[in-house]
Length: 278
Ligand code: ZN
Image 1: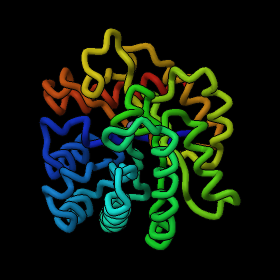
Image 2 (image 1 turned 180 degrees about the vertical axis):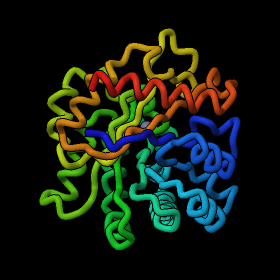
Image 3 (image 1 turned 90 degrees about the horizontal axis):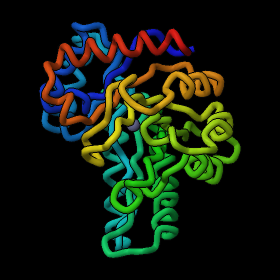
Image 4 (image 1 turned 135 degrees about the vertical axis):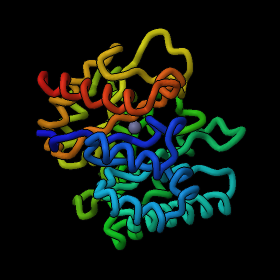
């Protein structure tokens, strides 16, 4: 079963609301948790944001994002690892249980995707002890393959699970995955992969895939408006032992023009509708 309520990723309202405004708005409208992004977090200040979250009584579902491990030079890869270590500390300070990893694409000019994937695995291996020490879970978020070159060369749930199994074969750590329906819905092997993810799912992100896509990044749809069987995927995730919150994550020029309160209320209503089918 899902935890009652709904988390909203602050990217959903990032054009309308700063982080303090989102914290205030989400708390007021009955959102169960917020997932901030580091750019908005830095603009507010980590300590000030932590205080605002405490004052509002609003839990954090996760911090976006760590990752971006591949780089053309060893110095670049070390800098990426250091930045991820800072992200882990920030997650701890704001009470985020999970750091979401968008792992990174190919280094500039490279055609070596296998090499980039190896850099991702090495990067996660380097920060795993830091995450364990901080009590922050790491979650690899596979992204749709259209982002393989520039954002994330980890593109299926199976790939993410392979990394989990390679780095943590005995499940001694809290390394896991984020299941985002927008990125995974098309995968013909998703049912088996979801079952395989049992015990490793640290988050369930929802939005919808509308046709035609006007933009690779900023045309995600509202749940129920597109092609994704969100309820079907949600059933699989629950069967795989997930008992946390669902989290809306909509990057959308269309929805960023909407009144933010209407947007948040639409998200809440659509999830209530979907839950009846889960
Ligand atoms: Zn996501």
